[in-house]
Image (cartoon, rainbow, N blue to C red; front, top):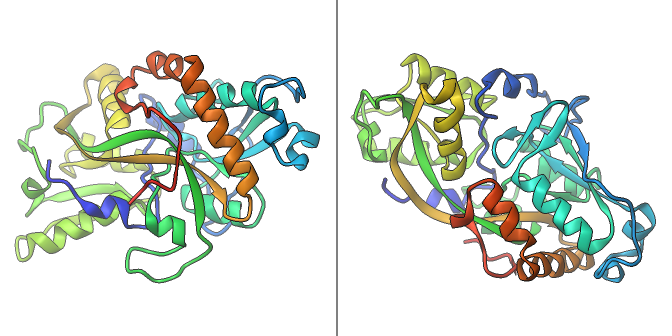
Length: 318
């Protein structure tokens, strides 16, 4: 698939639906686009209470030591990264957070909300961090949209995961889609406000008179439904998520991944720029779990070891 720099320049993040049971993702649909909106069923806390004996407890700002909790904003409709199962938010991000919590001596409390409100919920103090398979981009670091216009406060990222993107198509790939160029003259579906929508918009300009029609939806579950029915030829997702959806949705009979993985970039834990001590504590904790093997255990559990980082970095996105 043709690589796209759009993935790293937009101020929004890739979002996809929870897997397998698309209805679960739909149940998580929330309204509002400014601050993050809590979901009554989409909240979970990693196990364990505050512990001053934890190796990196002293690295935390006092407010988190006292509270024993770091509040995490997420959009729990993005399996296997984060999704709701049995009333609890589970997935790669919650498992990594649990490992970080053991090093820091605090719990990570995940609350689900709409993706496009996550950074604003961080800037307003509603959440302490965002951990939602969010791509680290210069635009997000600086609070810019994809045109370079200032839209809000920037954030810092502690980068913890690498992912490329892939096209999700109907099982059997009836339209023989292998790249973005193959989409010209066709219709695609995508979640609104994501970097994937911007990627499709950029491709539409490239297609020119051979028009690419883009249908944007509030959730990726809706976009998936359009592809499954044949009303759209493709959706665009992060590779681990696209592969998971293809493997599980409809017992593996609904979708295929087309064109492989391309345009890899980092996911980061977003932290307010005024919260450097927390940012640095998270970086130290990530390096600790990479060193002690807990990080690798999580990635092996979810079969995403190809997305591992070898060390924590800050603001490495482009």
